Amino acid sequence: MIDFSHLRQDFPVLQRRIHGKPLVFLDSAASSQKPTQVLDVMDAVYRTYYANVHRGAYLLSEESTTAYEEARGKVARFINAGSRSEVVFTRGATTALNMVAFGWGMDHLSAGDKIMLTMMEHHANMVPWQLVARRTGAELVYLPMTGDYRLDVDRIPELLDERVKVVSFTGMSNVTGTMPPVAEIAKVARDHGALVVVDAAQLVTHAPVDVQELGADFVAFSGHKMLGPTGIGALWGRPSLLEEMEPFEGGGEMISDVQLNGSTWAPVPHKFEAGTPPIVEAIGLGAAVDYLEKIGMELVRRHEQELTGYALDRLAELPAVRVFGPADLEHRGGVISFALGDVHPHDVATILDQEGIAVRAGHHCAKPLTRALGVPATVRASFQVYNTRQDVDALFAGLRRAEEVFRVD
Ligand code: 7TS
Image 1 (cartoon, rainbow, N blue to C red):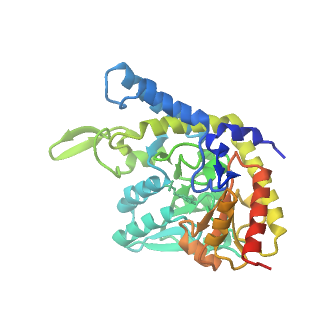
Image 2 (image 1 turned 135 degrees about the vertical axis):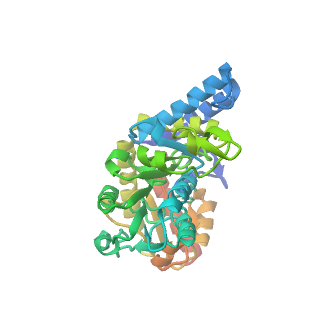
Image 3 (image 1 turned 45 degrees about the vertical axis):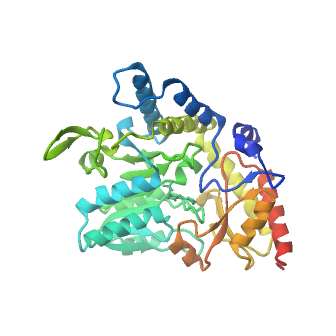
């Protein structure tokens, strides 16, 4: 077992007690906690060199501009982008996906075209495409799930006809933890001439991501799930597509020139970053990347696989627990959705909260997927670098307690 327990001390909030018990934070798939290394960097920006970027001809502005652009470079290196200009800072994965759906979709889709998604998508990779489909007349098709909670890739040849112009899918499900074979799907879809978009909101913090290896056209993710702050995320895109794609938002900073009846755009990536960007958040994301790189994403993935394996074994000791997700650790990450008998997930979460354990209960913004699981909601425990076997043991004990309270046999 890889010992990550020393990392806990980097996360101040994990020192808290909840209802008199030590906090066991198992909701990192919704948003992760932040290490001191990120908090300190953000604090230092505000205290020592904060100013707006790309504008002032004075030292503070030069310093914050340099730090902002260095953070872009860190994110680019983290995902092995060809250059930092391939990384557009966005508000998060949601904005990045809307940027592609509207920026690319409105110019390339029309009636008769198809948008291929999967049954596993978070609403952020479903609703933007539904909006664009409604406006362009394009149709939506969905790749189904197999009985063991994986994407049914065998159905791709049948569904991927010449009308499919874009294939947009998750790199890791935020409900079942499923990790689809992204590179394999991307290759088939691109060979077919479709644009390939990967929602890497979960993937990027649970496994190494190399955009060259994934073979997608666009990759979207958020900073707050990968130990960084809220309000910042990124869209990686192939340079030619970023050049060609229309900006999603207009405003300051994204122009080259503005005349009364028209404008020209700033070079990529700035043409996609209208207005004052989340400067301190971007720099904070750079610090989160530094933190994760210091551990190494290969090790993060291995730690999480071991912890997930341990958690699945412990949950299997409770006959009333039903896990919705692949059993094979090669095909899943550290997000575990489950039911406890027929106890409502919110009731389970409430009992766990009394024990200091934070989990999420609900549809996890993936209603079609939860519906396909045949339940209105699930309980979800999700892991990050700071979680340990002790956290899993606490979850197990908490579930035992919930069984007693609700008299589950
Ligand atoms: N895609 C996936 C796979 C996600 O898990 C999420 C957020 C998003 C996109 C959207 O990211 P955002 O940062 O723009 O909101 N997932 C969750 C979750 O599982 N619980 O809360 C947010």
